[in-house]
Amino acid sequence: MANREALRELQIRLASRLQAARTESSSVSSWLAVEAAGNKFLLPLGHAGEIFPWTVVQPVPYTQKWFMGVANLRGGLTGVVDLAGLLGQAPVRTEQALSEASLLAFNPVLEVNAALLVDRLAGLRGTEAFVASEPPQDGTPSFFGSVYVDADGQRWQELNVQALSQNNDFLSISA
Image 1: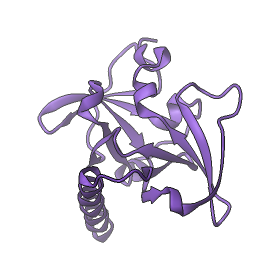
Image 2 (image 1 turned 180 degrees about the vertical axis):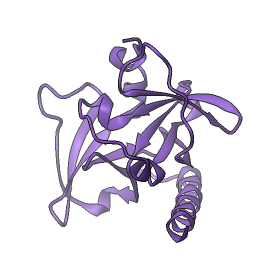
Image 3 (image 1 turned 90 degrees about the horizontal axis):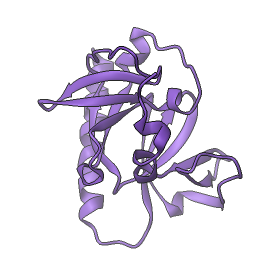
Image 4 (image 1 turned 180 degrees about the horizontal axis):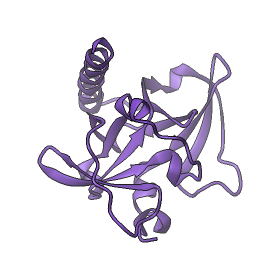
């Protein structure tokens, strides 16, 4: 119970920080940092929408394995995509792990009614949080941006959610 309350408090703090970051007119890049199947990702704040705790997802038959189904988020049906699954990983999703996961809705401006399942929210990051960056490697998905390295040597993959939302593989959920 205490973990659930702590998660809700974190989500409330992140939501308020997201809103504050959106209203600031700053030229500094800023991202929402998330983790999925042990991988670290940076999602541009302008692409991120509301953050929701895990909720019941109704499976949809004959869809890709990474398309988990639809969930009722704020009274509307939203498609739920397992980010790790979409990227070719097959993490084991136990009820315990899902209860600690979050759903990150796409910004309504992108006009895609979807949310990404992420294992952990890791806060907000700006360019000052990183000591190095590398361009995307050849052969990576078109929606991968630069890789940023923090002071601890951890690598964070930038994920262009707008490009993801227009990617043919992402849009083709049928199996």
